[in-house]
Length: 543
Image (cartoon, rainbow, N blue to C red; front, top):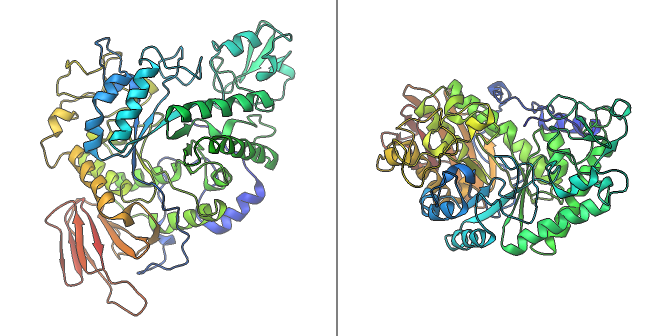
């Protein structure tokens, strides 16, 4: 869901000076960095602030309900997912993000009724433990969606709270006797966030079925820390934190104040401290759907990562338009800023799409070549790259949300025992299936496998810094990557025509890239200082 912006004016001003063209309002998905802002650079300087060189592979976001069925009821489940871990292992991912798996009255699970349980549609706690064991045996970390901003209106806490002022849980939520006199709020969806109950009106900024928890109450904060600790003790490796910027301050009158920003930051620091008592290496990635100035404070001893929504728009915009973009220039400055705020512990979380957004295939106009290009851009970015299930096959989908979360296509025509049938597939094609693409070396699936394997072969593609590089060709996107002593030059031909790039002569203090080491098309070549790039091709050069 898209949420409104908030943050400190002083922080906005400082960030504007630092980041230049980075917006502080909610990012537009079609935004593309302007090439005119890119300085001509041909080497990597030591001034760049590197993100932390911790685990930074590829995470796979999976909607369990749609992925794989093990018992024939048409609903994906944990045992079905466990049975398909070898598919994910071969894809090359080393992380798994589970969308909500806790009990909930909704199909999507973002309104929880029991934070300590497993949705009965998905299996049992023993099934979950087996999934963790098998994933870890393959070197795959598992993080789970944790929705703490609100509960379901059917959660026992809220049901009790709604009984009136005498309830133990009354102050766990925000109540007003007369909503018309309550502090105004525009809600996260633009609608009235106040909802009438039998004993007053309550705050639910997304809708009435998701009443907001009151994090000013110390018992609420204590309970949420305990919930996080519980799942870490079960073996979870971390959490994707839903609606991370909405814990405090969804009121129109307070949403942009430094006080609210500080309260949100303080809560996530408290949460982090509580988790550290169980597992100091737990990975926390937050949904902070906003510009860099709003994101930054959450990286200060709180979250490890925040999803890079600005970058997602830039990558898709570049792939769809076929024009070069200033990814290296913009991202290096953003990383420098985030690195300083986090004390060097920041790890980026680039992605192309997720369960709330138009799928990649639709965003690039149905072109498999441009979908491959988008993947090439994503998978040569630093940090933990996130791939949404089915993205690697070119699965299509546009809103409403259900159509972004359709059954995963294991076979050309469907009907296999593992395929889910809980909803009909509006966008299914025979070509966008595992069966159709498995053995095709030029398929989108095998393109993803290749690019993910590059990240394992060349750590500079997943760790360290990114810097701008002017290839001198408006149809070629280029940037430099470095990790320690390892350096790489990445070039993408964004067009449907053959493109050539001439590398500069080597000068003192500069890195000369003389070896073409990785390519998505064997027809790419390096002749002297001239690189020939076939259409939609990505190459990596090393010194």
